[in-house]
Image (cartoon, rainbow, N blue to C red; front, top):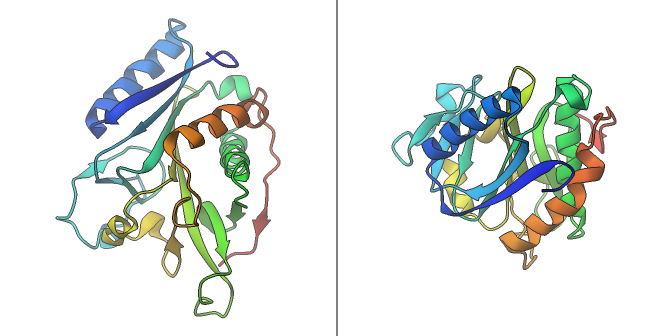
Length: 232
């Protein structure tokens, strides 16, 4: 228990349906006052999830992995071994009752956790998720430095309790992302902590997430948004 929030690290590769059913039950228990808020840290077997805005054309390899309708906001995402999935079941009403501010706090939390490894995560207008600039890569078609996505965010609310959450790439097979257009964003790549040359494992990231949770996600949520730059 930390800051009134129960943390769980789930072992092995957790079937998506198992996690979704458990989240649904936990949200109801939080609303009923019979369970505390929770953060669950886990990994899934390889799969794609389709958010409520998913464009079928963005599923470019429909037979590659199972596809699950997630019910959260957003488009297609990939989950698989080597990626830390962070499911957040938190009382948004107690954190300011502002969904936009809550998402900004999640962004700030991811950025603070990445900073523990000297990785500068940034937010881009017009592009969801957390991005890192890649000066070691060839510039993009517009001549600007290449930027790769390292974390995705997608949540759903039920009576002001959040579920679904965040995924951060530690050491997944990056080729698995090629079966979708991640979050509907073309012309940008995907990276991970290990791809950036950092010998980080799940335990390292979990410890960083626990250390940075309180300042970013304490109640009430603030509306400051870190490192927002131009669209692209």
